Length: 341
Image (cartoon, rainbow, N blue to C red):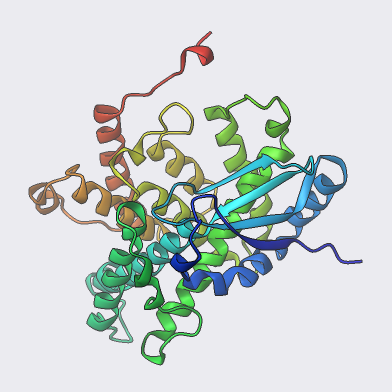
């Protein structure tokens, strides 16, 4: 008998008026996200073991919140005595928007100019202004889920049944989203796999627990690096990091419960085994650069003064170092008293 995960939908406690029911396009992608999880053989074998011996439920929930994003994902014990993984569909919709925006922005505003400078644009690619305009609109709509929820806007957001004119970028975003959900699921599962959920009901995950969960999730995915979907899984990890970073100004701080974002990005990007010129360095550099500009961590003058980059890794190192400095200045590391004993 083949072991199968069971994903289902749940309306959160915040949702209590049927007349306010709404639709998020990522609902259509949920079965595909489950397929991306089940494709990771090492992960699914570990999940199967935990379902048998470690009180894990094979069911997990996509929660649709009525309003702005309150949750991202978590694992907790339910009335059936089992630990259930829950993933916010609202956060998922925002994450889909981030993945589409970054992939279009990187391709058109970073990769093509870099190829032109290096003389390697042999196919004479040019920036697609229509795709860029579309991506900007999608990203704006996604950010509305953070602070100003508009119920009807997502009826107009394309999904897997997309208009032909944007089918390529939307299908790309769909794959990124499914891979991102797979990483989120693997991270939450890792808390159960590593025993973090079994300590006691009042226990809060420590920074070290979160680091272990990140690295364990990556270890499950690592065997997929050389497969057909390997790069997509890597982009999924980078998109989760980017989405978390871009939520708000204080996202760069772990606030004593998670690793500070600059350190988390550095550690996980290292685990993806990327070459110096791998596009993914430039992809996440775009997210870091955007945060720095939005929250005044870098000035246009500083941008003009830097002399250019020979590789995407140099681009990433430059902006990550800026993020590291700003985080240290604005959000010095917080160590809760109970952890310092």
